[in-house]
Image (cartoon, rainbow, N blue to C red; front, side, top):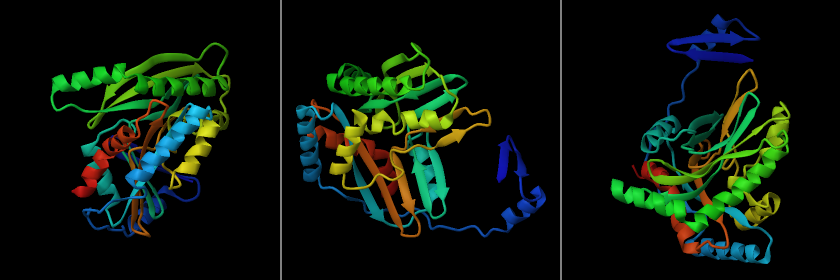
Length: 313
């Protein structure tokens, strides 16, 4: 109904229902809601460490039985507190700058995201997916950093996680791709962010459809946040996780007028309900037969480090 175009230092207002000058007047007449500054928050886990480890070991039993090959298993941390959402987003972006970060407000609910992961991008007739699977901490020195990156590259467990999801994404894209056009452009590439190194693969295909609905239906939810086979992995995640994911592991992005689009994966993100003063974030990882439950728990803490730094002030 209304569109604001921001370019350089100019804003152009378009509206299908009222005069742009009247819309400008209405915008200026709105009383801004002022939030208190970010307070140090006491964060609690929705799942004890023992419960997490028991669940991981139970999921490994499902893998041994052949129910699944891999599942993304997540847990929630939460706090009853008050924050300034946009200030929180700016601070999180400084602490953990990422290529797919975003800030979203839907009435009294906010998403404050420092996502490093692309879900799917359409550029002309090409579709691109870049799943992340494989995580390692940053080193304290350049030499240690390089050693950790090399260890991540050679880690059989991390590589198996990534390759299984690459297979799943190839299968998803094949439903909407022209024959013999699905390509793995990069397998298990290592990319560095402020707090972690990540293993990222890139899969592309040439589309046989321009229906945005068909493309999203064929690929969502993303394999990196579900597992393989996708449906059974989702069922088991639902069974063992203690929190409904909501917007977490969903996607935020844009669709351009020419029907190109780009969507992220909602991870490394805070969800804030201002009406209830409820703040939460979820972290998780891929569970395979090679997973060590204790190390998986430590990986969750590593992924949450930037958000914890924000909340501890």
